Length: 186
Ligand SMILES: CC(C)(COP(=O)(O)OP(=O)(O)OC[C@H]1O[C@@H](n2cnc3c(N)ncnc32)[C@H](O)[C@@H]1OP(=O)(O)O)[C@@H](O)C(=O)NCCC(=O)NCCS
Image (cartoon, rainbow, N blue to C red):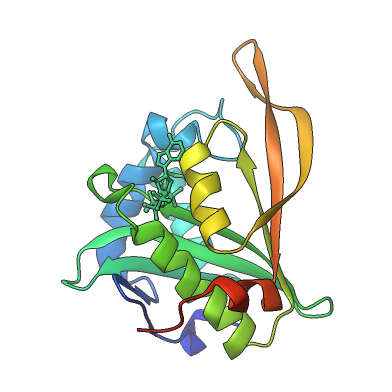
């Protein structure tokens, strides 16, 4: 599914919208924030700079995956999320960043992830969603558990930050499991 056909999705606290140029400066800031980079797939990764972040933004916008900006009800961009879909196996690998620290830990990420999962399961008819998260990222793990994700595996010493290795957790949720915990659309 491409951006041209991406819907506008409504949640209780947030709306998910196809990212416009208004999101780019925020995206560049988040992709260069050392605290956020440490929680990414490559914790030792150097900041991308403006050009690197812009090229990542462009490739997410034009690529085959879903990519949404997360906006407050007042229209303020606070993060982004997306999904890479495998149609054959009816599954999606999902990701989320609430980049604005002032909005972390206030329920926005859980609401945004629920909106995305509703779209994946009820809108697109997928069967499963999954993701990977640092074992130390307890806030993210709790957020995912509230969306019905369960632990499916632990990848030992999977991530390197300097001379330290840490574990990555694989989490997944099936459509029926999500529906059992989802309060439903607003
Ligand atoms: C992970 C993220 C999407 C979660 O969204 P959020 O809006 O901050 O999370 P929510 O407020 O919806 O839920 C967080 C939950 O974790 C709990 N929590 C917060 N800090 C915690 C901690 N240190 N240990 C355990 N639980 C914690 C909160 O109390 C809340 O649970 P509750 O509703 O049962 O009280 C967001 O924090 C984020 O993007 N962080 C930076 C990037 C990141 O980590 N991305 C994910 C990479 S896999």
